[in-house]
Length: 158
Image (tube, rainbow, N blue to C red; front, side, top):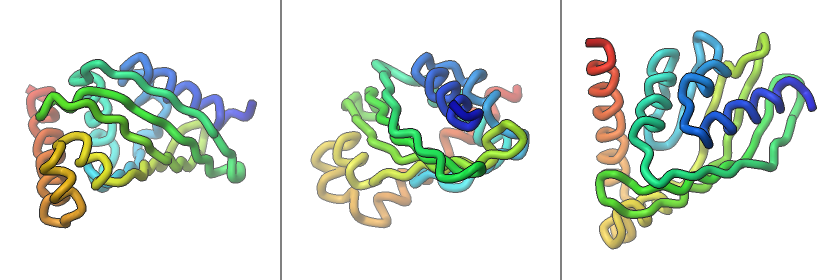
C-alpha cells in the first residue's frame, strides 16, 4: 500500500472515530479544502471545520472505499456519512467523492463533491425537496454553515 493510500486510510479511520486531531494531522499546514457547503477553506479554517463537525456529530457512522491513486500526487475515494442533522433532527446519508493532492507525506488539497439538492432533501424534508435545487436556498445553507464555523472558531479562540 502506497503512502498516499495509507494517509487516506488514516484520515477516514480517524473520521469514523470522530477524532479531528488525527484527521488534521494528515493535512499540511497550508491545507486547502473545498466542498459545496463550506466553500473554499484554508489552513486553520479547515482544521476547525473538522473539529466542529466531529464535536457536533450525532448518531454518526462513516464508510469509505474505492481508493484510487491517479498518480503519485493525486488520489480519489468515496465515502458515505450517516448522521442526524442537528438543525432539523432528520437523518442524512451523504455520499461523497473526495479528491486529494499530496506532497511531503501530507494532504495539501482536499475537495469533497456531493449534491447539495440530494443532501437538502434529506436534511430539510419537503422544504429541501421543493427548494434544495434553488441557488437562493443553497446559498442560505452555505451562509449558515460558514457563520456556524466562524462562531465555532471565535469560541475556540476565547
